[in-house]
Length: 519
Image 1 (spheres, rainbow, N blue to C red):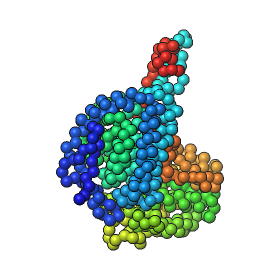
Image 2 (cartoon, rainbow, N blue to C red):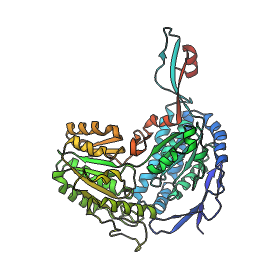
Image 3 (cartoon, one colour):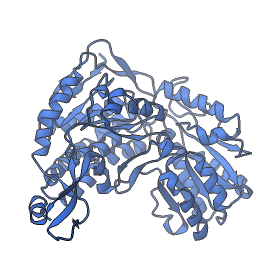
Image 4 (cartoon, rainbow, N blue to C red):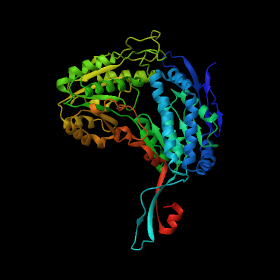
């Protein structure tokens, strides 16, 4: 009998009525489970979180909430092998890709737990030093940040059901807001199992954490001015959420992490077969094939000096051919299927649009030679590498993100000004990378594109052995970006808490403010 996935709201498990939506194994297309939220009372779920959950989480300080995160991370890690196996079956991930997701979740939670321990038992953070406001030294002002009196709602993307949940949850719980998590339906089994583990751990007080399995119904339409909404997904959906009447009327705080045409630029100083060149080839290939290219940080545009395009194509093709595609449960397979049938359809349509201005140099938009897969089963697509001849007329390369194992080479003249101009055509990104040992070239690109990105990474011979690559999101560095990328910002150490805290300027007598805030 097919499993029916349940939501966890109001401190209990809830099974929606009706047949529900099927959730499939992307390798075999077998139905793994169904899910429904029909009959779920979203108003009651919010009310309970705002009352019991808010009271419980606000009754303790940062250090105790950090202890909760430590316990949750430990509980999840104890079930690591089970979660990795489920990630492969329900998400089409190789074991390596599953580790990237599952370990990313627990490590981020552990990072914020450690950070929280250093904040002590208070429920607020000082924001800078106090300031004298008049001639009298007794009258001062102090900026503080306090948790908002509402609920944090997280709507997460399909590609990272573990990390997407863990990284947002770590920050909102540490900040002091009860949280309702709504994972993507297509990869829901992993998120639901993680929730089961966290509930069984019996760490969190009643009402602090809830999970919606399936459609979020009218949940977003019931948010108010003290609530926050953090969304990861397409720019289109992000704009729909931001434009909801109650979101506008109540100025609900919204964070969106959306599309991104991330770029990698190879400097004109880099010689083929050098350490920097090899680093560039490895990281472009890894970003192209890891999670089957279904990463918001994946490299979509590769800027290469025109005179070495052929050498780059040859090196990338050689590296891509090392990546075996097929059943992700097999040890020698390094890339599995796309997550859903609709995702595969979207990627193929995107490739078709790209071929209007670019030519294939590897792959052809088909399944390719697969390992351990039944004929015509699964949502597979072999890696595709394309190249454009005229970057100035190939507008779609800078406008369309194809969310799969697809990358386009864009020749340029080798100048930092030209590279920066082409990168900026992406209209805002999460992360772009620069591969060069020429400090003047690097400086030109960094200063030329920093205002268009949330993060930049620099790859050179000196860091070739240490670079985790642009596709790795670290909890100490911010994740987000302007423009197309959604205009949001997550993580970044303590900076991540700002979204869930209200900054307030308090003015008054110095001894009184020192008594209140201990400063």
